[in-house]
Length: 229
Length: 328
Image (tube, rainbow over all chains, first blue to last red; front, side):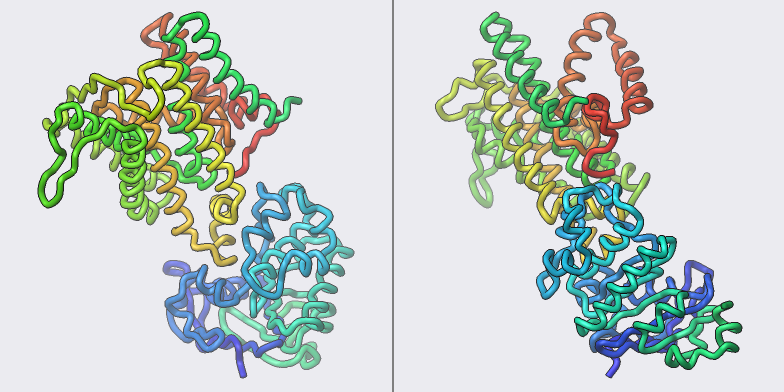
């Protein structure tokens, strides 16, 4: 049964329509890769799911609840954990304070986050703004986990990072999949890495869902047509 | 490099030693100046919670300063005249007990901040500044046209209010009361800043969208901070009125809002001791430059420009070589 469902979702930024009909479902414990070229509506879809942008038509349901009238902070409390594009840590707070400010009761606590990302434990008193890009990304993921989400959304989590750091991030995503029952949406373009974690792929093109299937089902034609790889 | 903590200790030491010296040198005027600095610092600490930690540029904090002042003025004037404030539906009499006056000032200022905050926090940026300014000016003009409590002429209180066991007319004892309150509020604000609530307020200042997506109700967090901020500034207003034994509509004016903001900018935005340093410097400048010329604000303006352009962390930021405080 689907944990998150989007049916025919449309959304606009003012007069400019960005989503023309998104269909997406994520089951419990499932990892879904949301793919598509730049500007095709992936981040807008994430914003709609997290209630940072109101959809104009269609249905968004999460954990059996209609999300239409929920504000963003209530959606987060329902169990949506977002790791946003560009990390966006609270740069003037320490690593500890970033995690502490986001903490909600549940399975994930400081010890578990430090076990997943030992470097966050080592840099606990350091200001988030003084961390490297990779460490900030770990902090962004750790912070989302501290909210004890039921669905974790990683929006371009490895973009702009050094290859070795990307490997660490992908390894942590694989660990999350293996050791927790967390549902995950990963927005990324790296097919080779997604192959190890994604159960399902959804491709967006010009604000619409155009393809759904497994990562092995991505033919060369589909990659050429929708992903430009 | 001087560490910020040592600078803070130096500031507090200065605030204690100067009036102590003035006490032994029998210079009560200097003690009164130090008391003014402490009260202004308290008002600044209040605004700094909203402005520094929360990024809420309120240009109407004079509303709470004035509310605190008038809470004192109204209660004390009725105690002075032996006339009740109201008899129907129940009897409310005036009082000259400082603790009761402070409590009333805090509650009234907090309620006012709750109403103003609930409305103004639905806006942001320049609109927020204008809405808060408009509320402050609304009270300013209301008190001008309120003859029951002196209208434009204000209201004089002939005897300073009382605090159990102390002679509040003794400048050093009144200074002591104000200083202890400032210390208590600094401790409280420091606790708030380090609490999950304070971190959420700070986080919402830096990344509002991000704060929302970790489940922080940004509007509510800001409103609570705004109310606490207003309550502290209201308490400062009550003390200021007691210091002068006089309240007038000027306490509600936009100039007061601007001055409280100047304390923070001079001392360092989002720094716990920023408003304390700023208020102390302001009083020193007012005293010495004001003696040179009645147009001393020109010099103050030049100093403010220098701080904004070359010492972005204010005096404390400049001395500690650390530009940013906790937020912003």
